[in-house]
Length: 142
Figure (cartoon, rainbow, N blue to C red):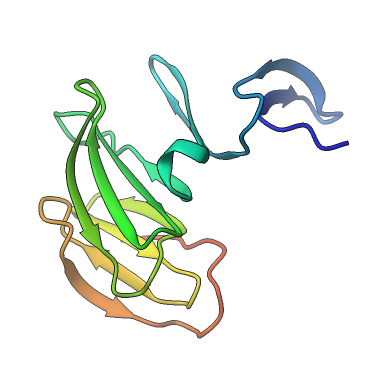
């Protein structure tokens, strides 16, 4: 039996269950961010196949960036709960979002493309393809 929409936390070397709660009875959980107000949890049905989210801590305005399989990258205002910007993705999807303190957002796709984007316009600054398979993660260091 598959249980959808549950979040659990564990602690210690033995991974003892610490907390657990249901977020949704019908949706898979795609991404979780830990913020001051509590966990911010991305579920799929109402967000057109969104897969990942990012909330950079360095912005004065709380912005959330959302990416997924729908061919769009979205920027939302967390406090006002409105869509600020939406751009089409030439690479087709966005399954990884990372923020760099040098003021750019990195997006990764299922076809191996990594884009470095300007967080103010979401336009591509630099594009490269480290390999031609799907990315599972990426790390930014300096």
